[in-house]
Image 1 (cartoon, helix red, strand yellow):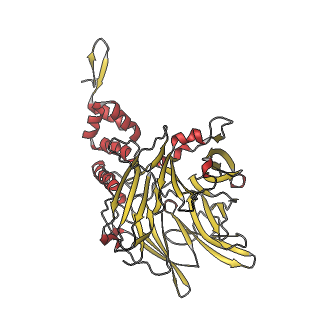
Image 2 (tube, rainbow, N blue to C red):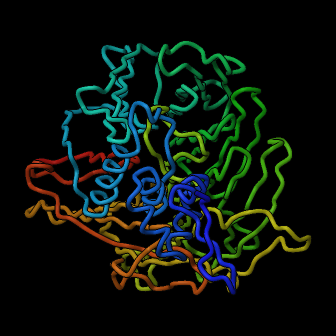
Image 3 (tube, one colour):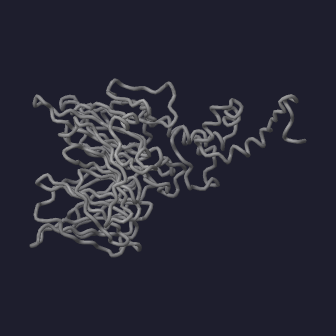
Amino acid sequence: MSPHRYLNDRNRHFKISNDVLILVLRYLDPTSLWRACKAFNRIHSLVLEYSPLHYVFELAIAGMKDGPASHAYKPAVGRLQLLATYRNDWPSLIWGHEHKMRLAPQTRYGVSSGFLHQIHIHGGQHSLDLAELPSCRTSRSPALTRHLKFRTPEIQNIAVDRSQSLIVTSHVLSLQTGIGVVLYFRDLWTFEKHPQAYSGTYDFNVGPVPVSSISIAIAGHNMSISFEFHNGKIVHLVLNWCTFQAGWLEDNDIQFLSENRLLVVRRSRGLPYLSLYNISNISAVVVERDYELPGAWARSAIGFSPNTSPLVDQPSPSEAMFYPDPSRRVILVVVKTPSSNGGPSVRNWLIVNESFFRPSSRKGRLRISWQEWSQACLIRDAHSAILGPYVNGSRVVFAENTPHHSPRARLNLIEFAPFPDSSCVQTRAWSMVGPRCVLVPNESSRELPPKTVDGRQIEDIRLTEDNIVLFLVGDS
């Protein structure tokens, strides 16, 4: 029998059989399938009955993409169940595993690309411990995580890019000519020189002023090393670690949007801007666009809260069943404005979808006024007692510590769902919502159980796609 039949001879409308319609719908990406479901009740009903399509529909709602893990290993029905749990547990701040680890005194620690790292010093010898974090998206329980330990020359900072099996470490040393820095480029699993690196090390001089802090970010073949000196000056080295082409930037803060584009905080004639830089040729950086910030922020300290989710459509680890859609990433700019009466500084968070920042399609449109582009932004007021914010993809987490005599802490989550519904909850902290902003916040919070924090204050937080890592200090 033909899959088509006439419903109305006058208008000659066709009805496609369910089997044929399913074959057509399986070609749609998650966003297109979601839109088709909203437009046609029949498609929506059919999608909910057919697990592979239902899974794609739920990916759209969660802002996720299907991962590279084989469907023979984990078919759509299993992925759908896991995704439903993942999507329901995050807004409620419900976790399935709770693992505690004691850090030795004077240990340098952090989280990078799904690994908790610790730098130990034993009698002048340095070692690096990497503990893989659990992940429900890969069915990697705490018992199945890997632990790596390497002997290393003296190092202070590290950054990991799991998708490239790359680990970059840095060491600051005092030389007769000033302060020197050595970078090491190693394979994540063997700790030998990375096969794509131009050389195993890269050393340079940063001048006579001591360095107070270093941060490293990796984006494909490019990376940045940001230095803050004791005198308050901030500079950034942008380096292609495969060719060692390098250049210096003296902007207030920088954040990668892609391998070849940076968003930077800079000032011109005393006024603050966000600027889009093209670094395809690091030795000749091109300013593609300037975005004015409010003049009231001229005296403010302005910087990015780094987004730790992957920049590109290359899921890591490779066994992930689903992963965050990079196009849903948000930019969060932290603004601290000095109080006029000498009290605590006034804090604001400027939030906008990362995909908003792109080169102009027309000549002469290099500068965008705040009045124009603020229509696509959100601003949230934040009090000084907040710890954070920490950003991963389209999620923002922050904590509120209570006084020492009552060591209860509260975790707070803001999610920006791609297709929000009427159930989204928002507090009154949002002082500006742009009329053209595509982001709709959904807020939730949870008081941390006493057994989780052991009567200790939260010192720091790290956020991944699967984990919230709390660093605790101080006895109750």
